[in-house]
Length: 68
Image 1 (cartoon, one colour):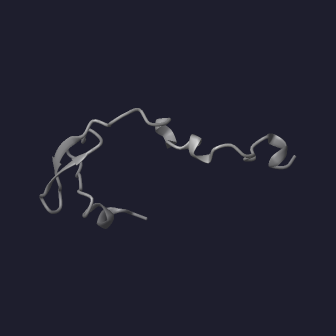
Image 2 (tube, helix red, strand yellow):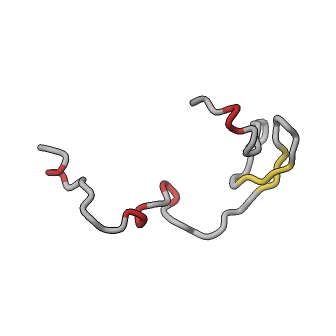
């Protein structure tokens, strides 16, 4: 049984209709939370509720902490 035999191939349609990842599409504006960057101290906003005791980084500092 090949890949195409299972019905998993892409055949036409709008590729953009499958965007959204795990969120399942556009559900409107996200709630933003004000935080202070743990590295540079600048005030910024993030689209998630920060967990107490875990560092939060601004857009400029985040790439310095990525593991990949």
